[in-house]
Image 1 (cartoon, rainbow, N blue to C red):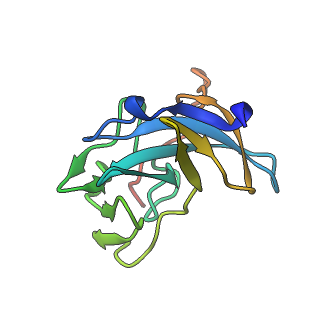
Image 2: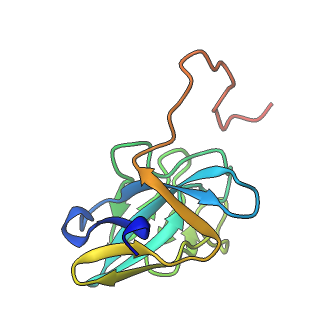
Length: 138
């Protein structure tokens, strides 16, 4: 089970998110995921806004939160941290894709059969990549 250990529970902040990487077992794609605390529990979500899925909620230093909800800085969508439901914004009614996690003896583990834990932090970016990450539509 140590291969699926994401982090210590104490490393998951109360007021922002904890970023890590997973590999999708079906597509072999590495994706970003986040942990968030809510009322003493921990939930896991893929780190992509449901309005424009190329936009990350946690850009590497923790996603902003307000009143227990995860906030997308790009266009102001709010997501319940315990259900992933978008309660406000352009994707209202959509849900963040969940990543199953469990807490055992003060450690957070990935328990989702669809993903394999890769490591902490964001996906490394290619500094020469000039593909636009803007959410502006023309």
